[in-house]
Image 1 (cartoon, rainbow, N blue to C red):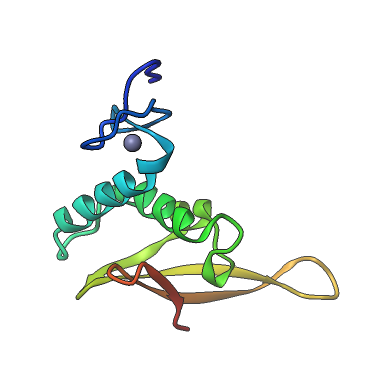
Image 2 (cartoon, rainbow, N blue to C red):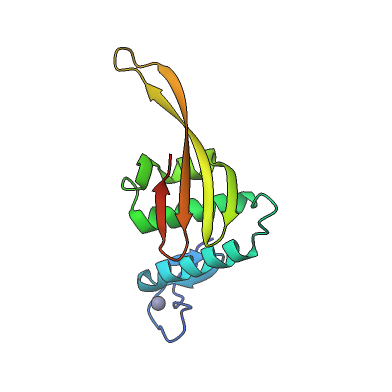
Length: 133
Ligand SMILES: [Zn+2]
């Protein structure tokens, strides 16, 4: 969907919109804050006893990518890795934890030689992602 010529939906802003979040237009200045709000709504909606919906992984990975910038995400993660390879995701007090399996290469021949499970923690208030183990 592409909306052309509309104005930012952020209260009090009259800038031209460039970005769309769930059909709602935002200007570049308010896009991150609007996306953050969207993430927090989805996070709060998530019933911790269940696995979050597929959509949550897209939102979370995008959010982390926004915070750090692609290429600078802790643990050398990428948006795609978080979106596609996250498992054992758990909602915690103030955040979430998840696992990702990494494939380590041998230096001698570039074959996958070892799979390592990494454990990450994301703290919502601090918008911080940490590799715990
Ligand atoms: Zn705006």
